[in-house]
Image (cartoon, rainbow, N blue to C red; front, side):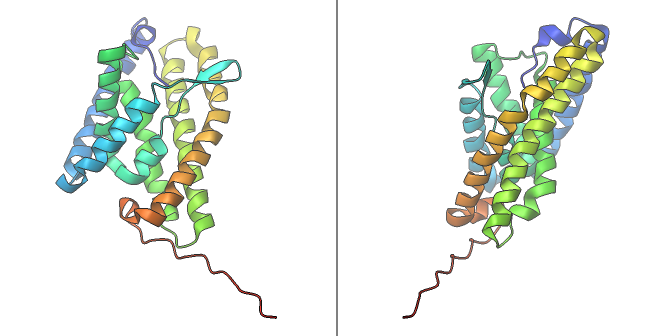
Amino acid sequence: MHLEEAILAGTQHGREILVAGGLLAAAGTAVGLRKTDYERVPQVAVLTAAFFVVSLIHLQLGPAKWHFVLTGLMGLVLGWAAFPAVLVALALQAAFFSVGGLMVLGVNTLVMAGPAVACYYLFGPTVRSRFEPVVFGGGFAAGAAAVMLGALLAATALFAAGKSYEVFAGVIVVAHLLPAAIEGLVTASVVVLLRKVRPELLDARPLPPVRQETAHG
């Protein structure tokens, strides 16, 4: 879902999107920093590192390459703090590996952190349920929705940048359908594990143990 700066910088509307994305990302980052307690800084650092690493590992999925983003998980754990976490990770990728670019840093941050915050509000209550199937479903929805919402935001930016990018915008959305499902399964599995071993990361209680009924002869 990384957008390259050369694409948006090539048109007048694209340059306007770069400015708007930068301003919105800055606002989201400011809110995230204000809402981040000192005790949560290690959590932000760990997920920033995880996002940085997994988004650099590309996997072959049919004819296209794809990578995990974990933005749904970041949103569930960090909330608004996902904005500074994503911003730092993307800035490091742009500086060290020329991924995306510094000019498009704001837009890419908005594309990935915006859906993360949305999933925090949409599915946060669900993953705090006391029923494991509901927790799994909420985790799956958060992981999949974060990917698809990010793809839609990226596609919208390309569509608004100019007619020459309209076809590519549609391809982005379709190409993320299968990755969204895979990301949903991974996120759901991690969320269930967190509810069992570190439920405080999700502001939840441990999942109750599964009752095993014994047969009486």
